Image 1 (cartoon, rainbow, N blue to C red):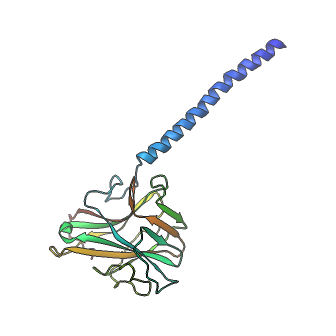
Image 2 (image 1 turned 45 degrees about the vertical axis):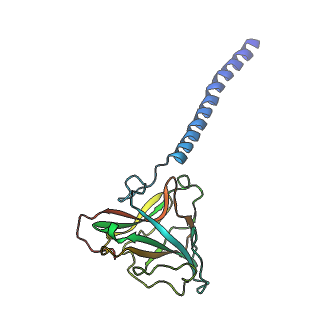
Image 3 (image 1 turned 120 degrees about the vertical axis):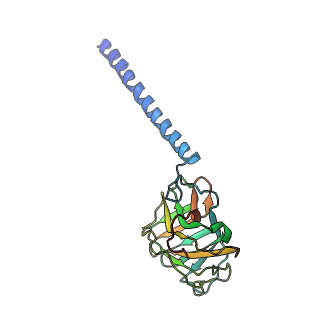
Amino acid sequence: MKAFTVLSAVLAGAFAAPTTSAISASLETRTLGLFTKLLSPKCPTNTAQADGKLPKGSISTSALVPISSKNPNTAYPNSEWAKVTPGDFCTIFNLVLDSDATQGKVCNLVFDLPDYLQAPGDFVFVGSGKFTFTGYDINAGAVPGETTYAKQPRPGPSPPKPPPVMKPGNSYIINSAPCGIPPGIGPVTVSGSLCSKDTTFIFRQSQKACPVGFYVVLTDDTGTSASLT
């Protein structure tokens, strides 16, 4: 009986050791994978961002201005954070392009929305991800502290085929077309608004590990299709 007890203890120890080691190794692998993803994330891509990063010459927003349908006459200042709430807050985004830099280029309006681990602390997202994009006229962008929901910029062409749904972990091209901006006229402002009926989305325009937000990415124009403007 004593020999059987000793044998049982030895066998139990032999089986317990590799199990503990396996759990420890698994935790170490997952922890290492998490840190690797945080420090060197693989950002979501689109046809204008082959590696998910922003190529040289890309344009970020110059202003993010909230407007509210429930407070249509309230003017809000420029904000570091864009705000979209169901049926209420939208955000108007301005981007300023150098007319000379756009010559012979396609203007790709992109929206980068990596997942939470790729952009920790840079956004809150709750809902289906259905958004509407409204375009404004050239050089008619939002004026912080003056633009309201009731007094929006002059209307212009909206993206003809924006993505029907946007969700974290992806990068989207909202519109892509030759820039069509005459040379030598200096800075040109393009703008639009982002709204939703069912999604809360608050984000900070960011270029930390992975880009977050609206950008214009310039690529070479090899065709003769219609102008973005």
